[in-house]
Length: 254
Ligand SMILES: [Zn+2]
Image (cartoon, rainbow, N blue to C red; front, side):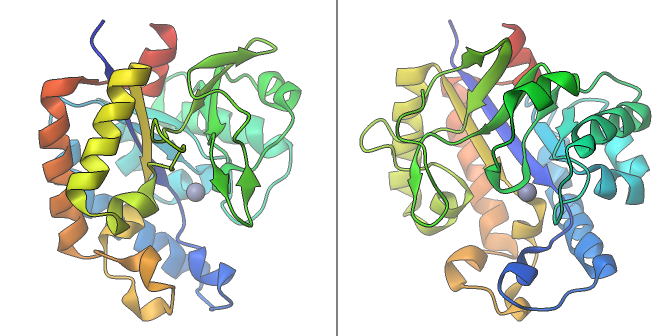
């Protein structure tokens, strides 16, 4: 079977400065998120790749046309309602609102910051799959070294883990992509793709615009502006011969 490449973007209000004690208004959070999405458009127009956008309903409410347009070719899934706050009813409300905007069924979830919520709540809210599992160890965040690195089912809910390296489970997420030497990252990603049969990666549109002025740690902003965009373009080009870019939903169905 052709290996599957699951490329995803968490489309959201840019609230990370708040984590570091910096003020940023809700409007500005939205504008930075949208500017990042616009920056990515040349990549997203490539008809040979399908990706998944885990989108907050809050963001979609501000830019319904953009989300509707993306939904023509890509999958729109839920990143709950708000990026900075959570209540259980946000699971269902965000799914319904995104379905309304896209006029399509929304079946996937990724929680902001991979927050863990009861599986029963996710099922109750009508989701088929959850992509909030990262089977790695992130000091100060989570230790998921006991969790599977392959697609699995829990009480009837499919769970799609984010990818890690085949050796030592190094996370192959957005921070590794921008901070590792490119050739090393590509090698780790290809190994994981070949061993697991899929690659599940996530980025954020706001990474692709200039966010130097927000006083964030340099490892989170490295390559913002054009360098990261070029790197992602190169990465997609280098991965294409090794697998098929499909949505999370298509992967779960297959
Ligand atoms: Zn997020």
